[in-house]
Image (cartoon, rainbow, N blue to C red):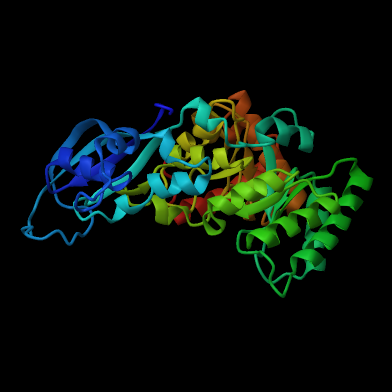
Amino acid sequence: MSDERLHCTYLIESPIDVEKAAELLASEQSIGSFVQVPGETDDVLRRHGARVEAVDRVEDGALPSLATSLPGLARDVRTTRAVARVSFPVENFAPNLASLFAILLGNLFELQELTGIRLEDVELPASFSDRFPGPAFGVAGTRSLTDIPTGPIIGTIVKPKLGLPPEQIAALVETLGDAGIDFIKDDECLTDPPSAPLAARVAAVSRALDRVADRTGRKPMFAFNVSGESDDMRRSHDLVAAAGGTCIMVSLNACGPSAIGELRRHSTLPLHGHRAGWGMLTRHPSLGISFTAYQKLWRHAGVDHLHVGGLQSKFFEEDASVAASARACLAPLGRHAAVMPVFSSGQWGGQAPETFRQVGSDDLLYLAGGGILGHPLGAAGGVRALREAWEAAKLGIALDDHAATHPALAASIRTFGQIRTRRGTGNG
């Protein structure tokens, strides 16, 4: 019998005694029921019971963050918030993501004694962590496949995201490839629609990429969105690989951990992990999961790239949160490789200096949709402007000063800088 334990950190909130609430959480996610049942022996409790290791109070007197049906509460009831550290016996887990998700993110979110519950971090012992495949490519493998040993990998997304037939998508890809792009991906909404079936899209785009390679000597990486049922994703992977493709994209939350783990074991290509639906898992500060824990789970599943949002973007996260997410992707995780953080959402190059400063690395995918495709000098100007912005960031030169001798960057600042100001999303 192994006595190793998996350690989790939860942010909890409760209108009852917070230590009691933590014990209920531990019981619910291991051996407990609402009453003691036959077979619930001391030996079973010792071997399989979750254990509350510590409860550190952080705030008293707050109103409940979430509704609860707990009987007898006054309308103006106050709560206590605390950080609860709970450990689970490794013996409780099968070595797969479904088992981890079920126990770490299961019925505890429904407990009426908790008016706030958020998984902040998870630590897996090496002997257990090593049973998962982890990324096959990660940062190093992606750089090798794209033949970009240093610097950000500059990319874009097929836009418009829906409605283009395969031939038009291929023409766009060819234009972007001739412009010097490093990476292109399908949008998360573009899977296998009648307007652009995946098989036809793969055939048309692959021919376009080959033509680009013949002319330029470089073949951009293209991430085809293969999200779907498990059997379909394996077949789609094989279709992309047979066509000479170098990447597939999956919507992690839509497909689920078991399907992604199975695809990882089957795949010979990098898995570009899109976190579509992330907001519903994390946007409320007292509910869900932090990106710190989220990225660990998906790295164990074996994704090679993982979306983190973008600085000064159109989404809700503050810049510090986005940068911390990127650093988490690049941080050590046992024997598992670091994964490429993917920056997107309203990126145009103006965010490059602050991104580089806060992340402390250029091991990242930097994707700009409108920032490239909507550039006044065309796609080539958009790609060039992004490279110039990152050049300025790494040299420590102010963008406006660098733009004085770099027309593409100057055009970006005139065009997109004003759009971002009007949108009011800059948050420093």
